[in-house]
Image 1 (cartoon, rainbow, N blue to C red):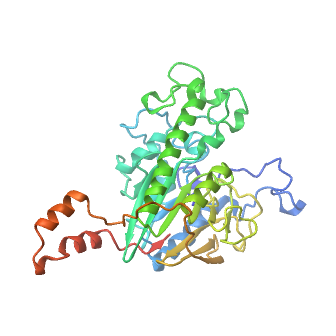
Image 2: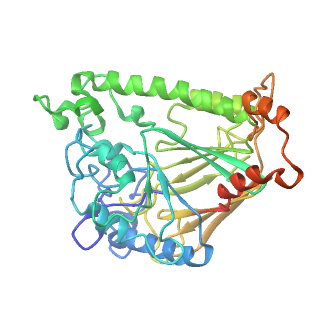
Length: 401
């Protein structure tokens, strides 16, 4: 979900995106245009209220976050110095004090960067501070935040089955080849990033607007190779579910995502960027990635929604997703800012077309250990002890909030 907006010192106020020139947004009827003060002005309060209330009885084990953490331009400091924390109070008022309560406290938040975390129309805001916050460093930190890298993986071991969560940075799709093109929608734009010495992010990169596009291209290339290898490994290890979390919905880079979903059996995309809530079901005619389910959860209230929201929450503009995982199925529920369940979808696994020559199994023993075990078989009362302890230490996750 997209969870954070503008910091006015006492909590978030959504970034106002209602003055759009798109005739299909917020202007379908004269009475349903502009800013809905009853909902828009309190959007994130409404979403967090419903989220925290549901967390109290659902008790989720972790939260998946799809980026755009702070509007308009991410953590409000310059990139390149992640060893020192920027105390902008954004973490305190827009995250720690907003999303909390019984069932939510102490639960890890796993996520990716959105285009606004880089700066929106620039690349040199405090995007590396989002990564650094995984290690705390500010007085308000509760230790829940978890994004250790720009792209990364989180394998989860459940009783009887396994899941691979793969977190991918797709902000290449908001980068233009030239720093002078499309300054309002260009992370690498010179107009807002600046061309002066010191405008870059140092060794964190990019160094300047002039190497910015190339830097993001290199990041995407390295990441694509990594993702292909991780998905192949997931199939080879017989992991039950593969979920990809990325900011831009998969129709950005559609051909690549279609290939990966077909080849390796990606079961679900969890995305944001679009300011509304939607679930493209496994066999939905709108879903060009079928039978891979596509979740859009960009309606966390940090920015005003695509269309006019209902005062009572009977809409798909603001909200979050609640999912439950089993070995043979997944249930996702789309929950609105009023707490209503707008849609429930249950889906099954998508099979990979790529078949390895040899399946390893998730807990395969390395050859050195296998040779040692053959020469030194365990005593009857010791058999399985180490493996059971190791497995149980990594289990206990059952729900996704």
